[in-house]
Image (cartoon, rainbow, N blue to C red; front, side, top):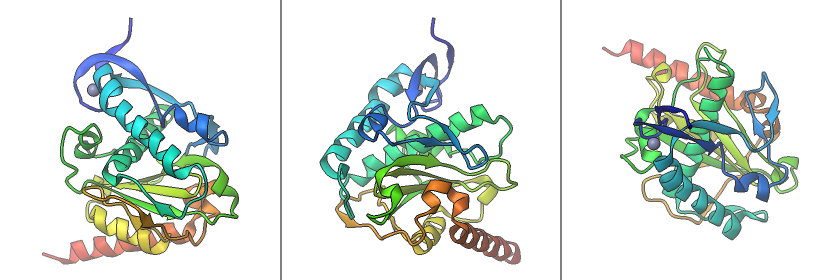
Length: 258
Ligand SMILES: [Zn+2]
């Protein structure tokens, strides 16, 4: 008998099923893909990570539709090196947010007690098409230079949950593109998602997906320091320093205002 519990997506009590962290097509279509835990663990395991906390209705309908869309998008656009993102950005964005949310729960299972800021509930409902996004999540995409090693593999990374204020960011890297998912977090309460998106766009550099209406194609800027993709977020000290500096400034400003 399948375990009973609360579905991580719709929040309803149900019989729980197994959800793939990314999608079954990712390891099939990108044999070099890996799923990365945060840097303290390095390489975690192959591309078939699963989590067993999703009800059959969410798994078989909205999540499966997102996987199908992403797989078709892949076949149409990304099987060779490209410089422009051509996608239905709200749909691709929901798939990328789903992958980040799945990786977050898998990571929390491996490291109970970690402090990674949870994905906001409105973003989770938006993933399954059950509510508006309410500016609770943003996505920035940057491009790996064609000759770089990372342009031929794939993986994920997230924040180090042992830090006092882990970043509310995760990325999914698929060959030429690195998608950074950013979400609203209590521990980062003074920083609106749009502001974090802007800092990442300027620093990485990258361009923001339009998660409300955006349709491609759009040119994707080349990442200035692509080596971090192999090492994880903490391998990009410039980006991390810029974000922390920005956050401190926001915090100081918020404290200074009445
Ligand atoms: Zn559900």
